[in-house]
Length: 166
Image (cartoon, rainbow, N blue to C red; front, side, top):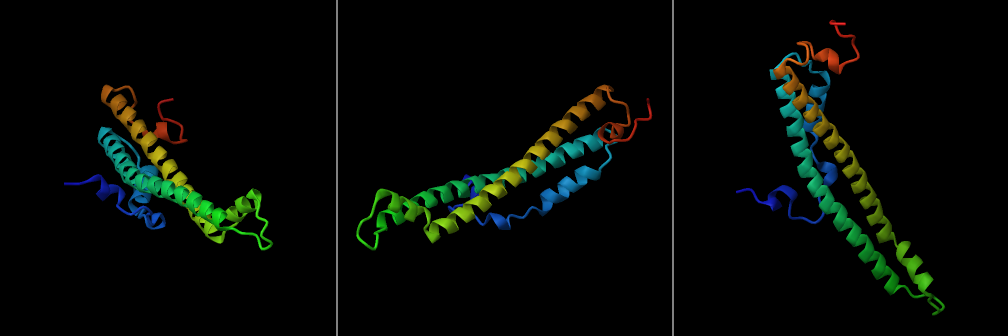
């Protein structure tokens, strides 16, 4: 039995920088250089793209969980620092508390970690989008090849080369 916690993890904060993207990068590399000459090649590329997207979907779930957790931690630590701040002269204003919370070294460290997580999430989302669009491209190409709509040399459709049938 595979439970959701097995996929997204039980920890609130994942070590997202250690996600292994080797297989995803290999898939993207294969899709970039593979010449699709028949239905079998198109179906293989379609499945490869979907496999890469599946891997990234798992990582994205973990990363979204981590981003949410870090956002909550930033707010919590900032509020705590604001509440604990006391001016040296004993005259503490609301603005002083607010700025003290925002300037806390712990808040800054969490915000840097949060920025890294958000940047990582953006990278994974872009790769996921590329793989999903590639999957649909090959799915459409497979259907067209099956119906005989696309000439037998579909690789010229996907490259900058001039097709031979012109």
